[in-house]
Length: 96
Image 1: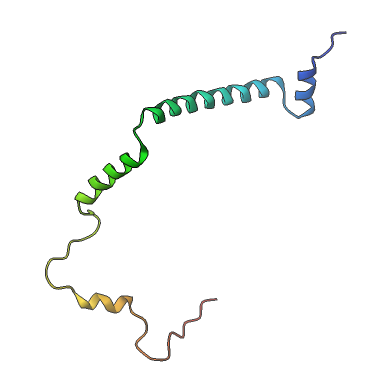
Image 2 (image 1 turned 45 degrees about the vertical axis):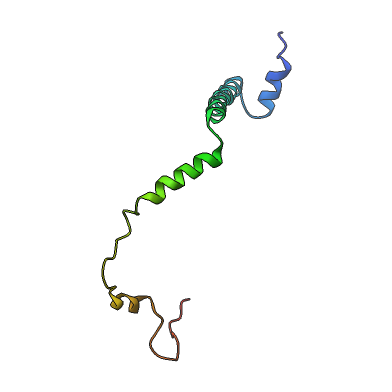
């Protein structure tokens, strides 16, 4: 009768088979390759603070397209939506 190698006995005792372990190993190797490529890209990048400063300058030059530009007098009627209640008693709403 042929003896089962120790690593296969451990795999079976842990609830995983040989194919499961090989699949996990392949996944880890794939992640390793991905991380090595990322490391190479990071090493090619200039100092991060310099890149951030350049990005910030480029962003600050243009106005935010999602915020409207107000030219002329403001519409003060909109402020009423953001104020508290008119009475001095405060809000009587109860949120449970």
